[in-house]
Image (cartoon, rainbow, N blue to C red; front, side, top):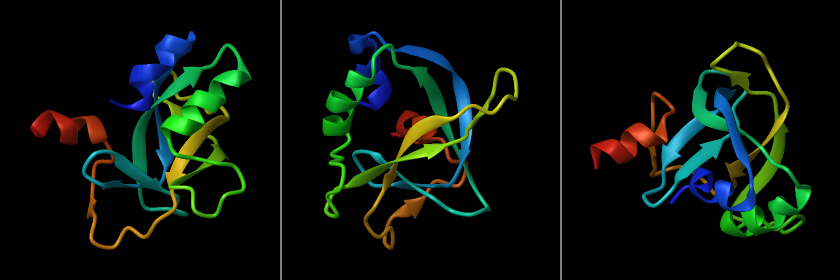
Length: 118
């Protein structure tokens, strides 16, 4: 299950596929997105949340706890590019905080393609 699979349960609406700067790694059961200055893009989805309270169950799903240095992920404000119209819009994204050595980099940045090959 991916976050996009649970968001509709909370009334969220998928707006468009999008790209964000970063690198994506295969952590087995989930993708591990990391921030990089340049050199990679991650394929994702831009979602509209009807209520900021949705962040609570989403943060729990992503194992993110604000201010906790041991959180598996951190939530950061990013500016992805929408693939339907090329516009940039601010959005929140979760980034992996653990070391990625030993994980395979997903060169095309699209975790759904990795899942489809399994």
